[in-house]
Figure 1 (tube, rainbow, N blue to C red):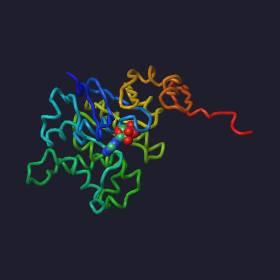
Figure 2: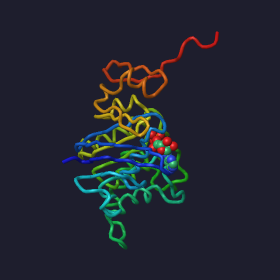
Figure 3: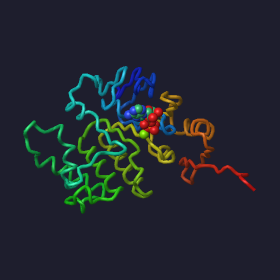
Figure 4: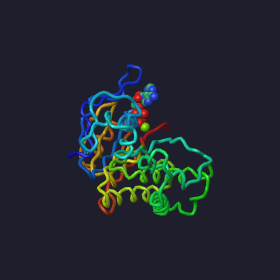
Length: 262
Ligand SMILES: Nc1ncnc2c1ncn2[C@@H]1O[C@H](COP(=O)(O)OP(=O)(O)O)[C@@H](O)[C@H]1O
Ligand SMILES: [Mg+2]
């Protein structure tokens, strides 16, 4: 069974189509890198999957129709890291991570020691354990981004959606955060859908890439098949060059337009 299945997914804002005719199925343990120029529909697609925007068509997670799940049940199935999360600035970091456990608590129940342990483990794995008692508002942009990831991972949902999860992180931290997600993918068979701005990282972490253009899926396949000079040049406008490093990994670099004003 697919971990996630989209059939005829479409979204419009005020009658203007932002996504159209999206069909895609992901096997458990897939990391799908969603790529595309600004405004292509990446965030809209992710937001539809957790019902933050109204959509047409069908979305199934683990075989169940998302439209029929309660909010709580949906949160047990799909965790979402938005691009710009709303943050309770006064809340301590560890309590913020514990919010990820909410779908498992009884309506009036206090969290259990096991929930607290999950939170501390995740903070440690993301290098944030020393900051557990700090208010969220006193963390740097990169720390907040890792904290929001920790909260989503605490949800322990089989499907994880990430909207440009590393935009505020420096290069080393970027790889670290994505490595953690990748480890959990290996350990738990986590299925990941990540809108990825950095195409080099998409090439390194995604097992499949889907290229969106004006709300349509125009290319899907392995990173090797999709991340090519010709495809990227065509859909990202600017000239882009795809290189290989010594390990054979893809590196996507912008190519400067030579011959400017003389
Ligand atoms: N809340 C909204 N209201 C109206 N239009 C929106 C809204 N959110 C996104 N759009 C439009 O939908 C299209 C897709 O946007 P988005 O999904 O944010 O693209 P991406 O994440 O790929 O940059 C864009 O044309 C954008 O302007
Ligand atoms: Mg976006």
